[in-house]
Picture 1 (cartoon, rainbow, N blue to C red):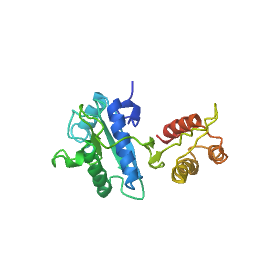
Picture 2 (picture 1 turned 45 degrees about the vertical axis):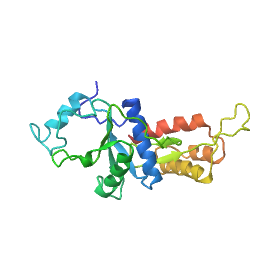
Picture 3 (picture 1 turned 90 degrees about the vertical axis):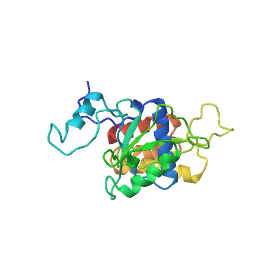
Length: 222
């Protein structure tokens, strides 16, 4: 059983709709130039929610939540933060993300009353659906650490690919550069070794390799 002091940042612990909504939010933030945000918490057990509620009340510390009833426990909410050098909860950045979220039908805690105000918090109702005019345009890298930036990775599907050739291909040099930057950042942070970057540069990295690499980076960055 997970300890009440342990924070879960795993996107897969949310409902399928919440996972899609979160990826869509990060995609639209990336397209707006906001690539420096990351997930700080997704699913919360009721025991952990109670534990956080007690802080500043029956347990020492500052108040961190106003309720025992949170959509974190129903797997429909997630919290985010802002990467350095900005403040962890830079209100200017969170407000911009909140504005984008509103267009997507995602609730932002920054719009709640003063006694419930929760700027890092985002959630969806049980009825949430992808808004008209939007779609996931590729693989969205949703960071769980400030060491990794948000990325939107769109792979080219070549009509002339030889059977069995699963090496990564891209629709544009911009997309290719974004993937390389993502790998380079992980190497610089010593999350992975440089052999991964060499594999990408020599054109032998497959889509399967990259999917596995993303899992490794997420696990080691948590």
